[in-house]
Image (cartoon, rainbow, N blue to C red; front, side, top):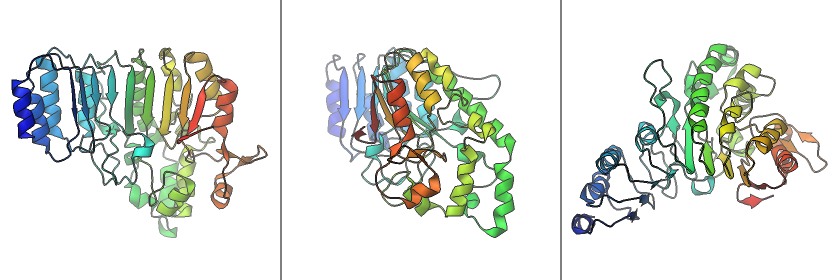
Length: 370
């Protein structure tokens, strides 16, 4: 790493693209790379192979960006670890000329995630699952710094922390027993929590709506509950939480609960998806990392009307926290409990609705085109 810094210090000022793949350095060393750059033309910075970057690197990045007239257009650290929620927000509010910002790994690159905060949580394979925590979103009155990277064409970003709006700790709420049954029911019926969530959801949609140049958008929601090496499927959920607790949790975002659906970041019209009608140039939407999305016929029809250039849709293979997520071979709806008992491949309802409303769109579930 010191040798590379010396090269950069003496390098010509024509350097435009820098890719760092060494995972042996520390945060201060990666920050030193940017400090050593003598170029004022750096356009792309790509960090690979599970590099650990943190506050020192982000400070150096923002300092470099300001010093050199914000020349940076491509920033990719989706395979890195250590980037904190507040730092993701800082990049979005400080780098006006970004065209590509990739800050969240696709589903296939991650395994077990133990943290719902932005930052690093134990991930097999080296990459982290970074998110902006909603507690770091400026939703209060007065100071509301907006995203300034309005030229973005490619964005991958996630949002988490809605679980923390519960009156009690998530793990405590999920430890279901007869003793805490009343407390859990009290939480489910607590409409003030839904109102709090809606403030954050509205802010997220309003910021995304500003990015009218977007071509590809990859979104993430809450960190998936994972059992072993699986994803947020029924089996994984069942391995993580007791069945009774899971059943109660699913009630929070069931279609019959209008207040919850309006407050959830689930990509429904009720939650505010309609605000994204400004993304007229969108060509690809990837919501595989929103394991709790509840896209239905209404949302698919809206996408067909609002996004005329949409050609690729990647949806979650997980249960979308809805009682009517799956269809059996005969086209009948299969409820959550029945799905948990059944084996074999079933057809996600949104797949058929997307194909019906958007016949020109390629639909993917996980790595499989359907």
